[in-house]
Image (cartoon, rainbow over the protein chains, first blue to last red):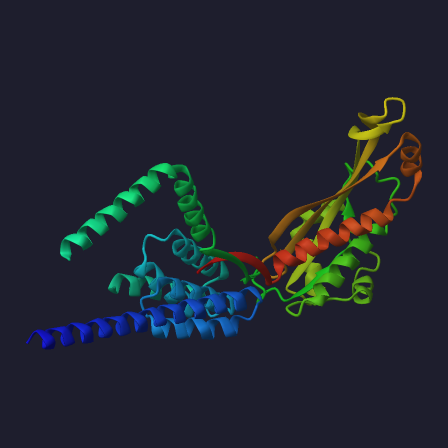
Length: 132
Length: 258
């Protein structure tokens, strides 16, 4: 009986280790993608950066930083609708971060300045926000 | 066995406490440094291109005629500048606008042909009816006119620096007086809607450039021709105006989070 308990303990210990290992591996991958994407963005390779941030978001959909960075990437390429939704997601996930809010605010300001077509984007995004 | 483990744990705990008490300051510094490093690398600022729209409706106002600019009467340098400088400013502006894909500009020859026998005066700037009529001759949506004021402002300045004194065998504080001559061009640009006869754009662009003079060179500079400086300042003002009325990209910062 005692031996069975010991076996169960050992197995559960290894299982925990494996789970922790897998989880931390994912986190590292997300961080790696993010780091690489930031370097690409700094070099002006926005398509590459967006590809990496998309992968990061696929692995960890609740990663506010990845959503925010993805928004920056979209905005740099002029994909304003996608940028707004990415910024929104980031601010929803982490409402306390001032950087996400600054990015989102600047994007909205830019939309307002740029003209009438973008008013639709803003109204759509605010409706989405109200829905959430 | 259990007692042994407990005593070992308590011993190591006590040792840690003692160590922390002894190296309190060092520990705090290390923790502070680690926190600072972690915080410092968290945010990266990147510039992204932002498209800035034109300040006028470029779909409506896509073709222009540029009339020669007039010198303002209050300009102090009126007598020294040749009359054709107004036409040169217009030519510079025409060139800048023609480079933009959104605009079509009536060329210099065509403008000269239609304007034969007409002399643009300062009073024309307020006469939108007459300018609109001219615009209809040109078959354009908007007509660009304006005035310029070119003047200089000279002030004595003192430059403080260090020089090596041979007598005192060390560097000493010294100063030098000079004349700072600032050339200023105030270019007023007006766009008139030919159909509605209304002013849709009226902005003044101030451009400056300064040069340092001794008393001798200052006297010579007063006599020297100033058209080159005026042309350079006109180019800058024309660029600023063109930038305002055409869509362009600007850099704006965004924050990437690590």
